[in-house]
Image 1: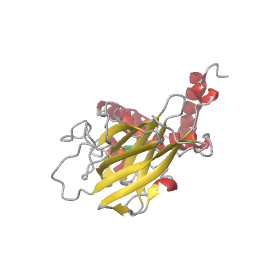
Image 2: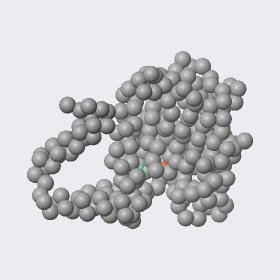
Image 3: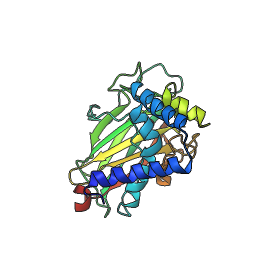
Image 4: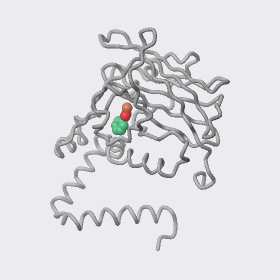
Length: 259
Ligand code: BEZ
Ligand code: FE
């Protein structure tokens, strides 16, 4: 009988893994190979990537199943969020020149509570990949303060960012995580997406992603993402700029969640 939360969670997960080992009649060689593999993942600095690849989408499903019915759906944060992103007064992200395929992007909307009331002063973070699939401060050649930033919603709960349209990209696949995907016969592509994180005192963080309806891999994400249909956007162009416009609904942290 578990006597605390940590004991309960770890014991349950370990027991499920043991079930898998029994069910698959895992050999000692396979067990040793798995231990060696996990050591390689750790040595390559890919533990967060490995865990996100297999579990981040499941985490989101658990959160969504227990959320208020009006709250916007959570999606994967992934390993590339950086809290030191710049505060942007005008929502314009720093971008790099020299891409042949860069297409201006406007992401705008309103943060609301689950009753629909607009919420001023809410912190909204956005980060997205470059037109060649890299993240600022993560991949070489893209400065940390580029293609990411924060704004606060105005008195009407509105927010607005300017960036460029991201492309589908492959998660890091030249190390042990990539080798595993390849050996399993799986690809390493994520659909083009924009990451959003909404934070406000007393409210549950909303971490989600916006997708482009016409893009590849939207329903074949290597991370088995949740891809909420409400966040898959048809093509809308205004003054030559692609526009994604959405309401984002956040819910108060319940006493149960806060505990
Ligand atoms: C991402 O979208 O940035 C991401 C999500 C899960 C694993 C790797 C990357
Ligand atoms: Fe991403």
